[in-house]
Image (tube, rainbow, N blue to C red; front, side, top):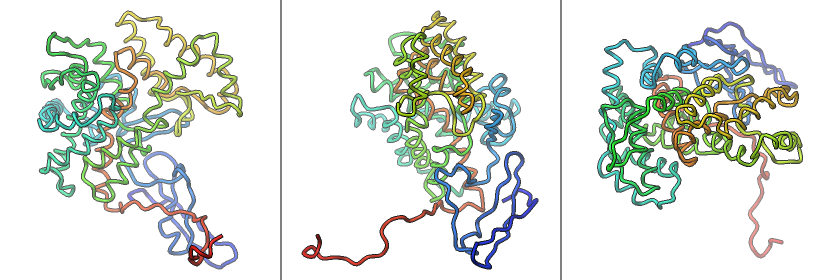
Length: 435
């Protein structure tokens, strides 16, 4: 680990004379960590941390989060600055390479990504194997996993050039895969990518356009799409990123690892939260019903949940939520639906919840999912596509984290331990003697 050893901690096992002095490690920012790798060999005990909420599984230079004060940084750059000044492909370059590109490098990178936007033509036939009503995430899991069957030339995980090409291919092809999943579901022809458009424009074109009519991408909507992608590009060691890293620790190829990340993201507690927000707002129905709904949320005997509030890491206002709230207003105004009942209901719910001591004491603040569902719905995306769009955006973070894992000499195959609480050893009993 490259952090500087500042202090040590001594652990003594009660009832014995066995003790272990372990180093306290410090990173660039954030809490210090104990290096407990010798704990079992020296003392014969493990740590117990369900959900790994107090365990650092790796060293990373990619993303920093301070949930107590609401900080999110990519490679040291605040998300607010990147959202205001940057674009998604520039953020992709930053995540993958560690620095912002100059003009020449940005142009070269953009050209490199857009060169790989098309899918192998035989992949089209994969879509025909799915039912028409298949969830887009099921399609994406299958198709992304299948990419390794078509692009054998970039599967050597120990070759830097292969890793670079795989990164380009994944970032470039996910919009095509996602857009085609939607087109297949609604029975429209697949639209091929256009490299004369920006990354966000190209996705909106493939998603909404049809061959019979000219489609012009609305710049307000493309900017909003680009912003959504930036905000979701990476988020430290969350469930899906940890899944990608765990799969990668086995030596699996990058396409298989990203497919594993997509599967993990599919869970409603992770990538499906913005869809749950819309369902919650629909169930509330009207501003007048908010007090009754919040009373149900506070009732421990009731199963009602306040979706879009609170976060596993953030104990303050999610910085992404502030950014996307303004974008939501811009999109609704551009589309002529400002004053949307859903948005009015969301804002009223936010205002009441933020002044209620019950939620303040529990540090339940709005997160990015609270507004992203509303803005995506306004842009014409069905709720079934919300998580697919999340996966499209997060792919660059996953592949960045995967590359970092592959190049980390201290990483080993992931193998969590357990506390066994099953039956003690017992002898086999024949059928005739069982009661």
